[in-house]
Amino acid sequence: MVPGTADVVVIGAGVVGLALADTWLSRNPNDTVVVIDKESELAQHASGRNSGVLHAGFYYAPDSLKAKLTRDGNRMLKEFCAERGVDVRETGKVVVTTNESQWRSLDQLFERGQANGVTLERIDEQQLKELEPLARTCGKALWSPTTAVADPVAVVTAMAARFGQRGGVLEMGQEVVTAQPGSVTLKNGRTIKCGHLINAAGLYSDTVAHWFGVGMDYAMLPFKGLYWYGNWAPGTLKRHVYPVPDPRNPFLGTHVTVTVDGRAKVGPTAIPSMWRQDYGGIGNFSSGELARIARLYPRFFRSKHHNVWGLMRTELPKYSRKKLVSEAQQLVPALNPADFAQRGRPGVRAQLLHVPSGRLEMDFVVEPGDRSTHVINAVSPAWTSSLAVADHVISGIHRD
Image 1 (tube, rainbow, N blue to C red):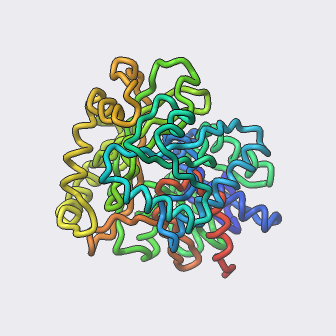
Image 2: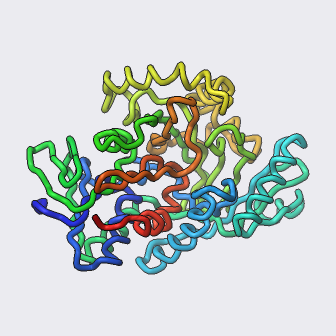
Image 3: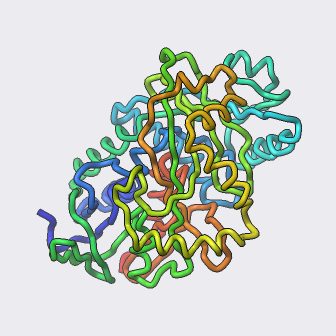
């Protein structure tokens, strides 16, 4: 039974919501903290559908939240996994080039890594061959030894367990239909009074924020990520292999990763999604969401901040498994579409759009409200950064 009164209510039982709740209780052990989620089971959205890669933190501008919180989050999540007995595979990652024109961008990534305090090495073709024989690069590459991988569902489950052991209340299958300062109303009509609300609602974080008059210039513009698993023997691919990303867009491009049990996986895509829970077919279809998202696209297409037409040209064809795997062959030539026939769980990236400018938000966005705090852009690498994000957010909350 959901308690009628709580010191803190967190909307969203994804990895960020659970980390926020767990961190609050670690500092305030006598408080009543309730996490509410509309799903009946954990890890049904991005927290359970991502690659599980523990990023190192070298992609991000040194003055960004992502830079600091990813570096620290990598360490903190590994410590959490060791404490809770969750397996981590220390794969490391190589970033490879496909032509000489990418060398300057590769150097910029290295410089960012240096500025962000992340261990990163420049390597040549021979060193790459020693680290990952299946990968190919054009003269230069980067080696990130602190990048790793874990099972995202196992991490979320362990986070929920620790939160419960601290005395937290986790209520699944309870949909929040509205909220205001001091109270949350559930679909079943029940109201919970709370001292402070934390919005970690993922794909619906903008909706919750708007109930409080927060983030009114923002709207969610979701993107679908598709993965394909290979039939290679576990351990055939040893390292994550990534391309040099396009700095104009907040996506890392198609890459080849290793799962915690040693399987090879190709993806993800960054395909525009026309409703928020677009995981395939017409499941969870919402005509209202379709209409709202469609109204955002003219603004997005006119954006001066992104190569939108280039993004569409490269991403939409990746609905084809053959096209997706063929693109990844530039990184790992041994890939064969026939070997990657097992579809992974699609994911939807809760990407925030700044509507007036048509800009996709590249950094985490956290905004205060009346007796509330709103994490309205917690995109990748939020899974890696979750505990550091929680530490940062909770430190900034002052009791009302």
